[in-house]
Length: 342
Image (cartoon, rainbow, N blue to C red; front, side, top):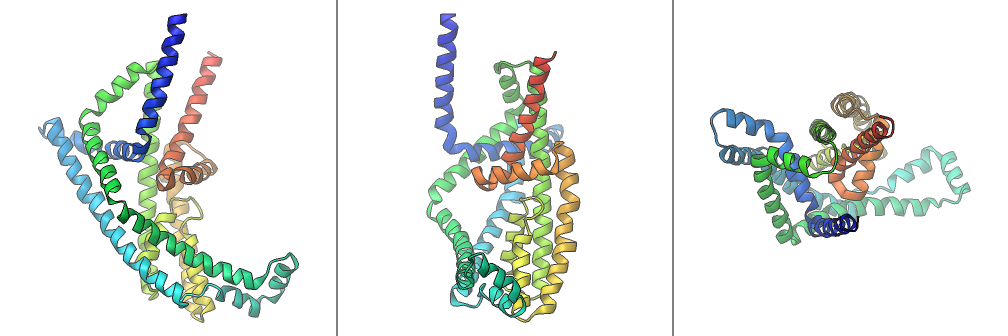
């Protein structure tokens, strides 16, 4: 018993230290795992074509770089340039969000009277709206600039991700089998959890990215057709916020539509609202339950809560981590019930 307790203590201590050592590289490790899961079928296909595991893994990595990483860098650059343009216009007063409240002063005086009655000062509200607009765009620019200023850390993480990706692609099955043999659970249960993990990863990433691409592209094209400046930026922002189920893209297109209406472009504003509700919003409502909900076996409300919670803790990568942790949580508690009631 003494030997067993000492072993458990040392094992726990070393595990905590090992986790602390690797914690700063959590996101590169996560994305290496995600990409290896998504592109593992391509690696297997190349092996069937008589490629060696190492060559197949290398060719798969080249495909990932060409199809995923290079387009991502291009979009990142375009968003950065357009963010600076929009920020300059907001700070110069070309985009005055306070006009929203001024419109309420003319058309909805009763609403403003009620706002005043509960202690809300409309002048302060105008100032806050302008600050929100400037602050949101500054956040985007600051994020881009911080990435540029931390190029060494960025490229280090990027290199680690690619390095691990090669080994995950080449030795993925052996790594999984080693983990299954090492963990102190029944092998069948561990394989079930691993299958659940893989299924949720595939469904979440494929579904979310497809929805983001479709919503961002259609939203950007709609804004471009309406001659809205910064349409590429706003389309990209719609794609970014689309990771939040149900309400994502509307965070972008609805304020733009209201600004158009309040600035006199009523027809354009109404077209954007109708398009946002019946085209952009409908994409999320139709595709997400089919692509994400059915594959993960998670109800819509849990997908929403886990996605928001994951993003809150882990940033953008939380749209994967949240649903995965939730699905594993449910699976583990189901397993616990089988232990409790065999």
